[in-house]
Image (cartoon, rainbow, N blue to C red; front, side, top):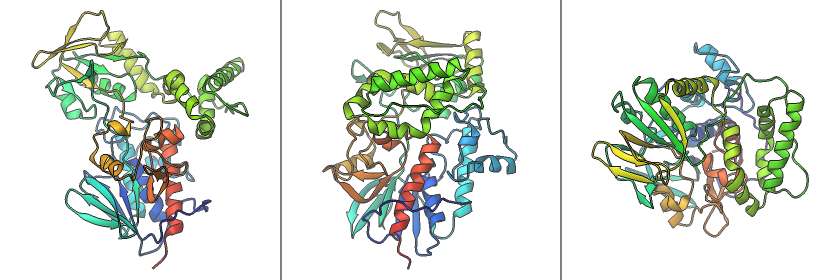
Length: 463
C-alpha cells in the first residue's frame, strides 16, 4: 500500500500532535486512520478510533448485510487510496470476488475491504474504542473526549460522523407516533424483514436508500407491495454501459450563477449528444471540478442552486447500478412497485397498521408500514445527536450557512461559533457538504482523509 506523501500548503496550529482521536468508525474514519498511520512511522503516534458499535468500516453506508445492496459507483473508482486506483480491484481478485472494473460490488463487501485495508497498516499505534462519544471539550492544550464509559485526552480530533438519521416524518408539523407501523430507521433491516410477507408498505423517499429498502422488502416477500413517494417522484438515473469517450466538461470563466451553470451543463450535454456521447459522460466530466465550481458560486447563488437545480443534479450524478434499475423495472412490471409524486398529508393510526393519503385530495389507503427514507438530516440546528449538540453548545462547531452540515474551511478545519478556525478540530465526510457540495462519495472522502492526515502529519513531532 502506498500513500501520497506530498506536502500540503499550510500546517494547522495544533501544537505537538501525539494522539489523534477519530470519532466515527465508518468509511470516513477508517480512511482517515489509514492515512494517519501510513504517513508516519513515529512509534509515539497514537490513533484512537471511537466507534459506538466497536466494529469499524461499516457505518450507515456499508453496514447493510443484504448482498443485493450494491455500490452506486463502479469498482474502478472506489479504491480507498487515491494514488492506487486499482487497489479495490486487486483486493477483489485476491479474495475471490468480481474484479470487473465496470462492475458494482455489494456494499457489504466494501466494508470488508475497508477493514482489510486498515488491518494492513494497523500496529500498536492504533486502538479501536467501543462506546458512543457524548462530548468533546478543550483541555490541557488539546481536547478531552468523553464517552459513555471513559474520558481520554487527544491533541487533535477528527469528526467522521457520516450521515445523520433522517429528519422525523411529520404531518402538519406533528411527528409520526412511535407505532409498530412507523419505521423511522430505514437501515434497520431486521424490522423490515419482520413485516408480513404480503405487507403493503409506503416508502417516503425515492433516492438510493429508498431503492435499497424496496429491494429488501420485495425480494424477501413475493406478495409484498411498495409505494415510493417523494415531492419530485423521480428515481436516480441508471448507469449504462460506460463509453470510452471522455468528455471534458467546460464551465464559463468569470462570475458564475446557478442558472448560468445549469445552462452551461445543458449546452454541454447537447454538444455531446451531437457527437454521439451520452450525457452521463458530461456529468462525470464535471466531477473533478465540481468542488471548485461550488466555491465560485456566491452564497445566494448556492441557495438558488439548491432551490431550483439540486434535484436534477442528484438524480443524474448519484446514479444506480444497472442491475438495480432492472430489478425496479421488473417490480413495476409485476405491479408490486409504484413510484408517485406526493408527500404525507394524512396518517391515521389503526393499531398495527395505518391509513395514509399522499395528495391533498387523494383517498386514503391502508398500509402495514411507513418507512422514512427522506435522506440524512443535514441541518445541525435540528440534530438530536448528543455529541453535535454538545459541541455546538461549547461553540466548537457551527452550522454552515446553507444548513447542509458544519461550517468548515475548504481543507476540513472546523469553524467555531465565532467564525474562527478551532485549532486541532477537523472533519471528514458528509458534514462538509455545505463547503464542498460533493462530499459523500468515496472518491471525495478518500481525498479529504488524505488531506487532513497530511495536515496532522506535519504537526507530529517524533518522540
